[in-house]
Image (cartoon, rainbow over all chains, first blue to last red; front, side, top):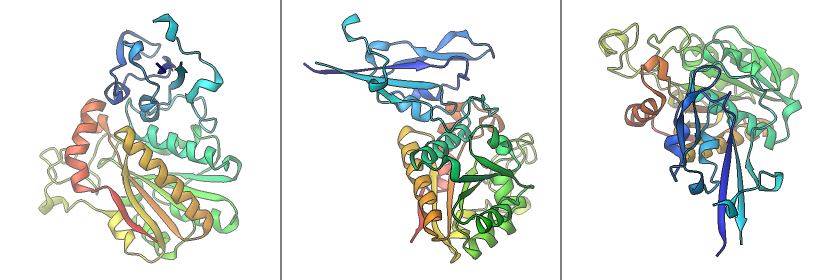
Length: 75
Length: 254
């Protein structure tokens, strides 16, 4: 069965940890890390990467445009 | 599940940062609506292939450094005077796409006269107005758009209409003027709202190129620092309080 999978790449140094992407993700993929970046923000990361469909909801709402989205179809 | 590992190649790319945005880290607070609106404007300019033909006018307020974030031509106007500067730029460069980017302290308070008159003259510019109901840059004072009962630094017991007057719906006011062709109110709190807001920005730019008059796009936004909330709570508070007071949708479209 064909399956569509996605993944995101997060620019952790640009992320300000606002959590807007976390609540926008329909699949519950993202969460805030316990680690902090150079500015002291808890950046977001893929807590549940297998659930990502590459819908890009997180990326279009990110105020700092630090999310890049890829999507691939597996036959 | 290693067999489903997505290849990070150009052909699988769904979304990436537009080249119109510079690499500078925005100075806005985490979760600020300004960042999202900047991004949408940059994406629309990129999609229209107008990067070298666009001139923005930045305001005084939180968005004063907008020229650091969008890689287009910019002018910086005195407080509230962005519509006057944009008028001159557009009249001298009729083939350029000119827009102003203003907040509620700039457009709806000190710049009310400029705003009303540019809309009455019907200059072919787009106005992007971010309404968060507070003066964000100066530390969260009451703005003309502050809601009744909303607490700010200068109305700590909540806005009282007997003392401070009523919230000012400038979108509704300019929709009455004959020079405007498109007046709409949008928000950027959910992915669906962001997509709608992007369409409104595109339409505003197309109207300005078609010479139809002023396009006025208002974004109901959040100021989580000024409202003393975290970004997610601020978006929720906005949905519950700001959007009923400033209903979303097109106010005028001709």
